[in-house]
Length: 299
Length: 335
Image (cartoon, rainbow over all chains, first blue to last red; front, side):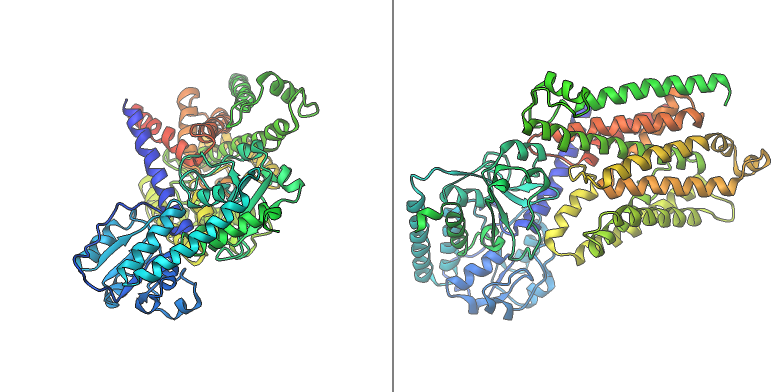
């Protein structure tokens, strides 16, 4: 019994550690809508906001509220105008002092897990914390609407969502009736990580006419068994790379070098910023994946 | 070696060797993918020359992924346990262990430097890991030697200092690296065998076997050294030379295993203790027994790590600590 307790304790310690890393380093922008309760009461107009994740920075600019962004992380590199905004550290190590000095009314974060103490500190300073954490495309639309309303840009946010939804529908219509392609999504090769059930990109792949062979694996970014990857025999492989990843993750993992995907030359590199940031450019990712895997649908 | 000891050594090694072989074969039947047991056994018995009804994919899983990983687990376990046994005998301290003394961390820093500056050149990794382990060993040893000689307490304190210092170096280096690289490092630091490198596997196996042999050949001197350095010297042991050999070999063992799999904890502590408890404290028996037992231990731990939540995986270091820590508490209470 005692041994079991110990086991569970250690297991949870390990998974928490990896989880935190995944949430904060890799994905930068996932979680759930629970977490910190926004302390925004009444019709306060938000004019100063700090973003702690690249996708949130992109959303703020896309709804036309870029002038209200007073702080961003070092990972927030898009749109180019964002780089003119003051840096407050990275998503993992935001500088609380610098944030407070910027006097924001709201701090946007994408994960609540490790930032509990941090959130508390901000709330003690009367700074509201808003957590958005989309697990699918609808969640992205919701966070765009939420951020737009908060920053007094409801109309522009609604317009943006309508346009993005149209583009998504166009893609979905185009691939409708096509045989879904079985794809392995390689987050990193060594060690092998993939996108699991809770990953936002898993929903994107489904919409792009793709069956992710790891769609049912629990979690968002599980470490995956090499032999299971080999046994899955994917018909295509997607490598998110070339954006913030630079040249990292541009090679297929060793276990998949003889897979049907590689033998048929169906390995597709797609800008990781489109696929890992649940923001407006997720639609670019959706289109890029659909075009890569169903080229005949877009003639 | 007298006849009784020799016989005892050979018998225990034969038994452990048999168990190791059994573990290699049986654990290669387990994995996240189910393979037909009879065909797999037949293919294993043919040493990979015949597929025995396995599909090409199943054959690849068995021989390209599973078996190399099991062999690496064996090499890593054997290395760490042998190094632990060597340190414990030489330093006359039952708590001496690569992980606790900061030697694994030294090797980890070396590997990280290799990955950052010579990422593409694989053989640089074990080389720098070895240098790191050696530097850490030297630092701990010098720190531990006070005017009153190296007491066990002083040694452990020195280990703590070196460990924490090197941990902060690791944190510093990871902070400088870009985010995409950090995640693979963090998993690796916990001890992970999934990235089994074809190039490093033969190195790790060779180092393990040679290291265990060299230390076993010095086992008699180590026995005498356990009486104290002065007594050993009076009994004709070349203390200085033995010390250098053991430090070099143990660092090499730790370096090659850390370069291949990160820091797998507790193996160097628990396995030699178990070996001594069951076979006595004669190093001529306990060192080879620890080498085989360590291999066995890590193979089983890694099989748990890669199957328990399949197709997801845990780092093997979590499992060895999970089994190792309670076992160590039990051993401490018994001693």
